[in-house]
Length: 410
Image 1 (cartoon, helix red, strand yellow):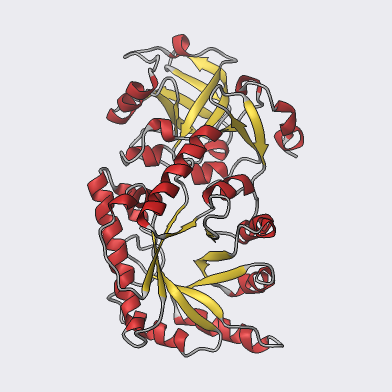
Image 2: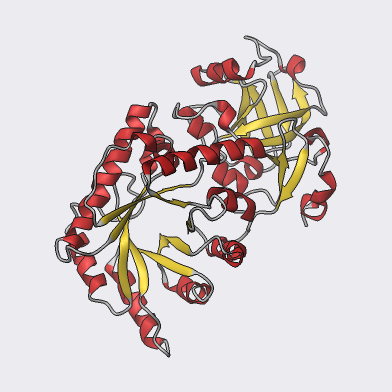
């Protein structure tokens, strides 16, 4: 068993320099500021909010994202996230969980069981999924209420969903509406391609395209049933950062809902969009310097692929040293990370924000010694967080004040 999982509470009250490594360090003040900012934007717009809990997957952050019950529904990527969130159902601050993958047979019995404790909604983008729901429905005795579903719309990321121009979309809508096993609650899209945005204007354009895309899809149903109330759910963290700029207007029968997930923590991918500052990153990985190699101007740390992930962005490497951002993890194996010099426009930007110690031509033997602790900003908070069994939650002075255990499994 991981040592931190057995002993994490013993580090409360201690500085992060005393933590076992590699460790995931979470800044609670940054989490709170980031969460509050989006909740305020949503409130000003008067729209519904459904946080995606896949990034940090824990009770404490989910409670924060919901505003302690101000908003009462979430979207999840795994069954374990629903199971973990049942604690918030029992607290009376969560009512609804959307399972974010297009439904498949193996998940249905688990989702049915979970629906006895909380309202569970499903994602549909193929008529075969309706067949699966009907087959399961036929076997149930007594018959349950039809599943509440979102139709998944592809607005450009080409990961899941149907394009609004697809002839399969109106057929799918009719198929669901004629089924005893499902009823359409709304239309959902995720603009994963918004991560390529580099300005507010670009992100705002993607957001407008999201609303236009799901709104167009919803009209297939509204044209048939003009009094039908329909939810259209849009969002991603980059577009959520500019939701205050939303200009789209919708028919009265459409309720606009925003979803986003990475925004409490952020990461280098988000900083690369220019929509958040480096200081808005709540996650850092603490690692030990294990060796230094002057001949190749590199250093070895004990944080490799399974502590960081092999995600990338405009920032070079797989993680950046917080106070020396021109040093980054340039290569990795499973448990080994190699720090190397990687000067770029993005690392220069980080230097300006952090008051970095780095200087052009700095040598590894000057920057690092065996036994040094280094803190790394990460490329993708969602995948990095999934590698760690405990989060060490710190205050502004990097003193551990709490430890949070995330939900694990599928």
